[in-house]
Amino acid sequence: MKEKLKIDIVSDVVCPWCTIGYKRLNKAITELNLQDQIEIEWQPFELNPNMPAEGQKLQEHILEKYGTTVEQYKASQKAMADAGAELDFAFNYFDSMRMVNTFDAHILLEYAKDFDKQTELKMRLTTAFFSEQKDVSKHEVLKEALLDVGLNADEALAKLEDADIRNQIKSKQGYWQEMGVSSVPTIVFNRTSAVTGAQPVDVFKKVLKDMLASPNVE
Image 1 (cartoon, rainbow, N blue to C red):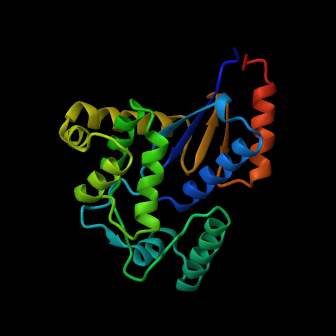
Image 2: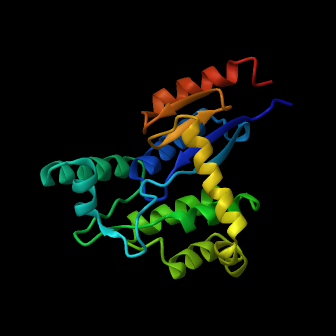
């Protein structure tokens, strides 16, 4: 029996290109009929680790962080919305949208891994933020997402108060930063090669074929 190709996706819940990148990768996997040969694990990365609890207005945040103009900001949102629409994902940007702190979401994604629900929860959270205009730093929103994917919400939310688990997530973030990950999505194949950004489906297909043909995948 062939060993599965391990794919680590380093990303953040509030990263639009991470969602687009995963959707394109998943489309490549599906079109190549490789679902049974792939194992995906989501790895934590905070776009804004110092974001305060109250968050920051998204437009103000993007202009301040990247030095873009309002016109560039609007054009970028349209490009993301168009890319999402091609993949049946809705980016519903709105004027009062806020960038939020995502550390708690990463703790819950780690919890979900033990139940093979990581991808399901990841997509539920990113849908809540981008499509449903919800604040994924709020515990009531996180609880709703946990319940939606069939997880024990009370047990999961209790992990948010566990200092050891919080340190574990910080250590994981540090590991990937030490590996050179400075932007997301970064998609790592068998921890031997990586692709950054939301690449086209055909690029992911080529990488998948090359990796599965490698003698390291037996």
